[in-house]
Length: 212
Image 1 (tube, one colour):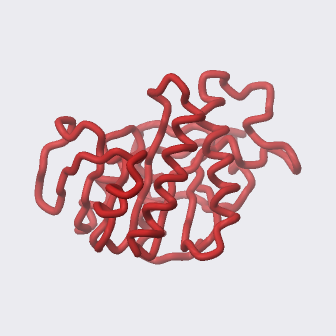
Image 2 (cartoon, helix red, strand yellow; image 1 turned 90 degrees about the horizontal axis):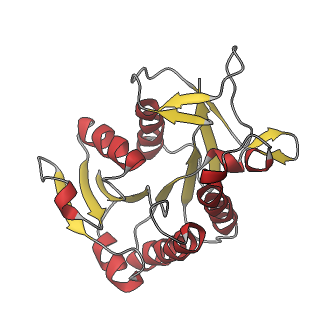
């Protein structure tokens, strides 16, 4: 499949890029700093500004799907920048005619207990609250969409580089916890779950999660 990947040089975006390329997909890497990536087989690197809706729609046009690993974590106004960029991405995808949007979500919007979101628990790191709140609001915006075919994948609480096992559980809106009481997924297995969803859609217009 011909995929447009927003944020392809970032923490999660790099894992998605590697997994998609390993499976033989063609990837257009849309990044703010193309110098961070080198072109290779099946990979095209294109400079993009997510806040430029019209230009972004033009870059997306013709692709089979859009994967977004967009993050505002490096910005001074993390939440404001994220939401502006996210709204621009939604509009650009719709204007481009690309049939599907798959989004990287956050664990903060998952339920730690019935009616209690992870972001609202005392132990949630303050440094990640703005990003988590952005992802939470992004999910609500997606749920209001009436025409866009979207999917959001939220990781477990711990998302760190480790092994690619291909062995994990999928869930819906509840934080997944293993037998030791830990909520975790490797960056590599998160990417596996996302590209699995790309290839065999099972969560259209829904959010789901992945964990061990």
